[in-house]
Amino acid sequence: MDNKTTYLTVKDYSVSGEEFQLIYNNELDLLETFPKPSEDKLAAYYETEDYISHTDGSRNLFEKTYQYIKSIALKRKLKLINSFSFQTKSLLDVGCGTGDFLKIAKSNGWTITGVEPNSSARAIANTKTEDQVFDVDQLLKFKSSSFDVITLWHVLEHLPKLQDHISLFKQLLKPNGKLVIAVPNYKSFDAYHYKAYWAAYDVPRHLWHFSQTSISNLLEKEEMIVEKTEPMYFDSYYVSLLSEKYKSGFMNPFKAFWFGWLSNRKAKRTGEYSSLIYIVKKTKN
Image (cartoon, rainbow, N blue to C red):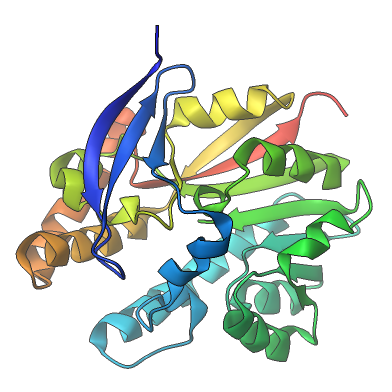
């Protein structure tokens, strides 16, 4: 019996206007974007000035708000990795965008390395990190057991070879290292509320859509486990703001704030926040 069924049809509101299906994988509790663009065509779906993680834009109130919230989030991310108490403090940030997390980590004593496929974002990042950010092919050139911490802040959902990448990250971690994965959660209240308008589906740039169960299932295949999860409280507000725009044609900050707040409130009981951070460790080396 086929273990994959259509879950939802979703539109690309950012670039192409094309429609994609979300296919439910019953074995993994995972949603897959279909059809997936070929790797040589995928880059075209990122070609917009509105893709804010590839710029340091502050052109309008929305972007200024994003940059302000990002500055708060950076401090929380730093606090998280500092809590691991590694002596050598070697960090790899995959999909590092314009390099702000690497910059703040470096200023706090971390030995930093970044990987970023977008050439414009990578150029900006290298001005902040003394040229410590590389193209994706560098991932295959690192030595095994090179890093204490590997972070992917809203990156795993973009990677075409999902299981292969998870296996590679395990290989690059030191024996007691931590893999930190932040991804949207399609079982959150705001996802259920906005349905096909939920901005965090972001097809086809997001190739995969995760639940807590799917993350555990994927990691189990690589003999890794989730040690702890943490919520990303701001994501419900940001995602709801964009979702309101997709649904009605304009941003409605009052409705967005209400549904963002409601999502976080319900998640206090269910644990199903709009986005979650997974702290992951190896069970075997």
